Image (cartoon, rainbow, N blue to C red):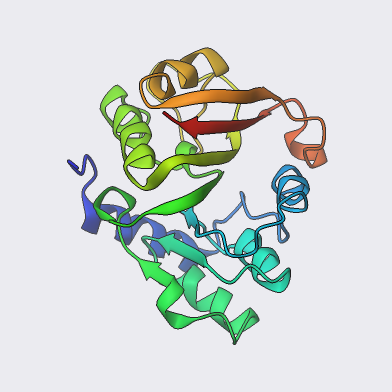
Amino acid sequence: MINPLNTEKEHQYWEKRYEEGRTGWDMGSVSPPIKEYVDQLENKALRILIPGAGNAYEAEYLWRQGFSQVYVLDIAHQPLAQLKARVPDFPESHLIQANFFEHQGQYDLILEQTFFCSFPPTTENRKAYAQQMANLLHPNGKLVGVWFDFPKTQNGGNRPFGGSKTEYLIYFAPYFKMRTFSRCYNSIKPRGGKELFGIFEKK
């Protein structure tokens, strides 16, 4: 897998944002659309990855619900340390500080929460995202979560970067079968009308 991002540059960028407290995306709790999906899962042994997890409230929720194979990946150290401080019994080996595009592993389920929107929205990056998601999933594994639904500006704008259902499907089509992809009805108020919830199964 080709890594389209400068690992050190991205690492420094995100560490600085956490140091300065510029974490406006942080809801302080599990995302309602993801919580509703998780609450329907019966197999607590699913191997689950949350990439670009930030403070990882989704991972905390899964762990407290008895899911034993939850892995959290982030390029920055600080959010991983914060998760460990909140949940002392979360396994150290399940906290992965790495560039997503360099990570290797196999998972049954990958949860997406504001990760796709976090890196520069070039065609190269977005194609690589879809390919790497597929690479990390077992056959018939699922990519599930929330993607932002608002336009990009001409120069890409500022993080978080936007996108549209039509654009996302172009990137996902070579690797995934769409099970559902529609506007969230249970977003938090500031994100109302700006989120899409999707379930994609690896081809």
